[in-house]
Length: 172
Image 1: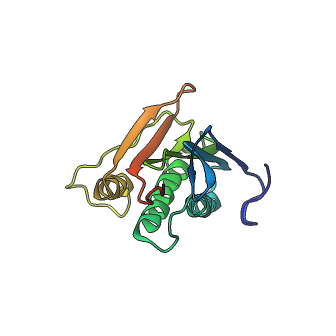
Image 2: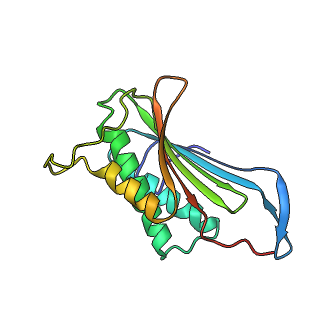
């Protein structure tokens, strides 16, 4: 599906898919693997669009919108999307947010851009007003029992991602 997201963007691509059906929940067939993706322009307005996308998808997947984990995921995607917009120096025209839920056990959130520069860890002694996003993301992921990762993409860019245990229990 193509079009604006929340009326604030003129162009974005959203794809949502479900993997093979693996079990039932309350008599309804459930997928073992769910995923959703949005590709947005590298523009500051896209940060809030990415945040709304993540909030909508995780709510659809059963996460309480007003809970601590939902707040954490919105903060993490805001930080990652902001990095994709600010630190690619116009060399990545878009960024992609990928969400995956595997067997209602592990949640994955990745933000991919085509810029080759990887996030830099600042020494603790460096004092500046910005540059702490990755420290915040790592701490939040750890606090929720997860991990932060960075991996290269085939086109020379990178994906910065978090993986967390999914806090919504699967019902038999």
